[in-house]
Image (tube, rainbow, N blue to C red; front, top):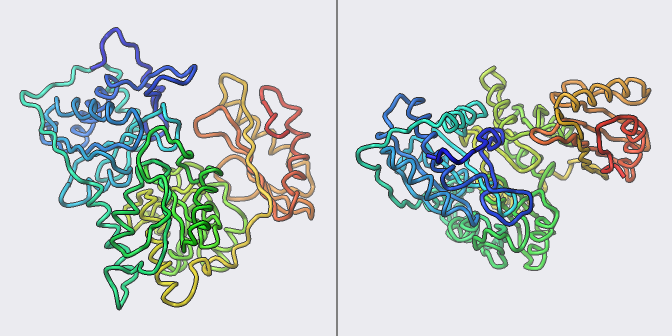
Length: 512
């Protein structure tokens, strides 16, 4: 338990369906709030929550704990393990792992865990860390995290067991990687070399010094791929080379350069905990955001014609046209947030509308066939299987998306709300923008929009759209603008600037 003299703002640790905090000193104005004591308490709160959920004594629970490459990971992981073992639960120490692998610890028969915890803060700076929780039903939701934090805040005297639970080291990432190897072998089903369907392919991996370095040695090498030129595979929580984030321009430039320099057939990049991934084609062209969604949608719709692809709100109009006109699927553009798109896809299936893919432009992609788990390595493995099959047919993987219309110009502008109670103020701005759009003869609010306001701008010099929404967690109104003509974003932005400059409580300097 956290000592009575320690004041913890438990609510501040919630980040949607995760827990995140500052774990290390070194950054001004960012005091540490995710200490070993706090994590011990959170581990014990998870045990009591899980025991109640499963109607099972804590002494009968089996829980796996893993971490990414963050500097604070080993200490915080030990704290979580010790806390849970003190309540009598059996704990598997799986060491370095990925977030998707932690969920798979509840599925793989040789583990069969009741729950799992991953110590990670995704792509956030070195001083941050966090906890992601899983049961056999998947990742926890916001309400579950709130419940766990309330248990921690209540200061319960968690009942220690007369005998501490066993702590066992286990090789989870090896078992998880073996599953990916089998996935690709079976998907390609190569007649001549079934075990090594990636023979003759040079594939470069960039793990950004996160937890994804295993993919080169434990997935690609057994499949026969040449991984020469792979980079930043060694875990290093200072992230010395680039931010491990497929949305980061520097990170994508690094993997693109590596592909070109090594004359590779394909490039792969992961975020820190491998729940997101992106790719690069043989020419060094990025396959992320709309291109990644289009590519995996083409693969999914081959297997499940006419089904629904759920994406977040900022996908391009050209992607909608590609999915619906070229592929014959349905594009359901929903809200930002990977849990939002996953839950919406699951809801559609329950309502009788077939949906096999939920994916964000950030690279979070979840498939029905894979427990709706957002798994960057699984998603990339689907692409690799298709790459190998295309090569057998003397084709290119990217032939699947040659008809995708991509925007010529795009940008995101984060407008900071300077009002303490920012959510009502942000929603008021969105309402005022809707009224402003109604006064513009050539702008139209897009129907079936589930987040903020999306507006079509069909004029010749604009030929695009914009979306203003309220950030999920921050006092920010992100403004996304895309255009199918060069300079179109500036044209749309100029008209919007006349609206935003009339408002108070909003820093619009990003537009300048």
